Image (tube, rainbow, N blue to C red; front, top):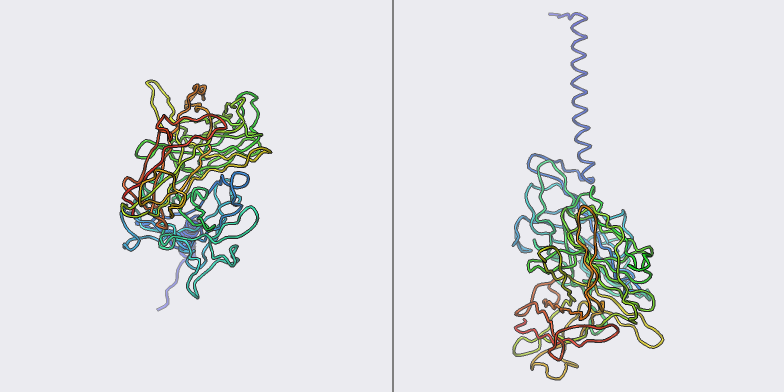
Length: 504
């Protein structure tokens, strides 16, 4: 039986087919756009998954003349996250955030210029289950990977593994890794700024890992270099411009010519401001930290001008992300010929023998703000004294490795190993500015005396930063004569010995 249709019916049918085709094409295009905006990952977002993009940053502060490293290369082969704050490396449930790295490990120069105004490199992206991810693992490629495994090409460490440092004389040295660097450098909840990384259904989040290379490299007594990583992470927004400003001389109002160090800090669980990132201001005094998580931060600035003229530390408190601080004035220590130097020894024992530990050294100053006054300890970025015709150069030792009992000072406990440290610091009290909607006002530095606290934190060598000794942190506020620990310009102050006990 032959059926015939009217011309009007056929016209309506064609219209409906065309409309359906357009709707289908639009839906397909929407899916393509969703994928392309997710960093190139081919996995589609669903009602139970979201997208994450991972980047890495490191505004370095220890390139010449502030330090000896021209380049620091690391090779990343995986980034993982877990919703449990206590999951170990062997636990199930770790989610891969950058699967692209498995077949193409990425070698990153932590001292290179950023690919954008904020980040060094995009490590990758992935679709993963919704949830609040409470710890991150950054996994590096072994310097001696198994045969047939993926390796970076080219390899800037050729002949020196796949992780290395390049010194100011252009010599290349392998950067020895801890076992944890290969199984996963943990970024625990306390080092994820702003709390867990929240992945919501159908949404995309940006995770940035900041690798503080300047606080992560130990030079052993035999001249080799070893990684003791200092990492932080946080969920960031590319729409937030970060925090920036210009460091100026409080008297001349001109940019400071010399070495200007800027740190961004937040209080830890004990209320002490710890450095998250650190950088140097450019020749015009400008600096910028980005990307940053949402929240408020403290900025601490120090400087050593021409002829080793020291400046006081200036602290700006409670600064929201997205703030341009404008001019930050530092007071020159008129008449001073150099900053102050704190010098001391650290010992470590198991109780029956000398212990081997890594120790992170910090110099703290107290600031006061608000009404009623609130007091806070801030970490002072460590400086260097440049060589002159009559004096030699002096560098700070932020990280020390205790492995031997050679040259321990008289009176040291028995059955200990020891090491000496040097911290170059301002010889004046800090100036403080607090954020307000109307701008910033800075207090004048208090007159002498200039008190300091030396903070030492012990860790198991090659463990990725696992705390060691009992207690694992010791703060010292006295000098070697048991008097209050105060400093004066161009003078070495000997700090009371720090003795770690009960070490592994």
